Length: 220
Figure 1 (cartoon, rainbow, N blue to C red):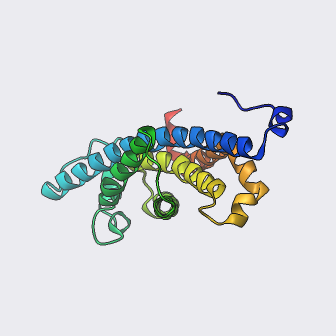
Figure 2 (cartoon, rainbow, N blue to C red):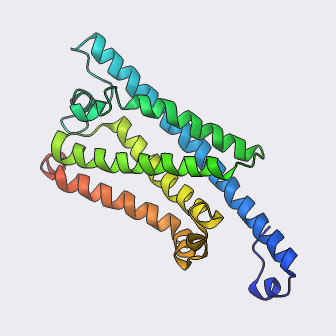
């Protein structure tokens, strides 16, 4: 079902408008369900793989992780830093716990589940923490550790659209407050969702190119 033209919407009764809005919100939640499912699976695979590599490195300090490809793309250089265990355990443990839950939530939406406001609020807390943690890890990788972890970068990639889409959805649904839901900024954020995510990817890519240009230039 496509969105109704503006002149037809004006002719609808209040109940019909509410039904149309609910239908559109359901369609958006279903698209979000697919994002949660796919991003959750991809993130979980990356986190599990990274954790297994970390365990192997603990067992055998001479082990070279499969994602240590060159001086810049080097999981081994990242895994042994303090930043890789901020909370006293390997960071991938967080992903191993969180991403399967995200995938399950997405599968539930696709199966027709309707979640309570508190669950959406909890998911908002999770993705906000996740994007903040990713932003910090990006800065640490670029300017402190001076190396990149490919599996970590997969997590970076999935966290950006997860945070954006969950936040926009919650803003529209009033989870972030009635004032936010009525804000025109929310509609702009929805309209420019794809561009916003692409711009974040582009910004991080440019930062990586600039930071390690001395190495990348030797490959040209």
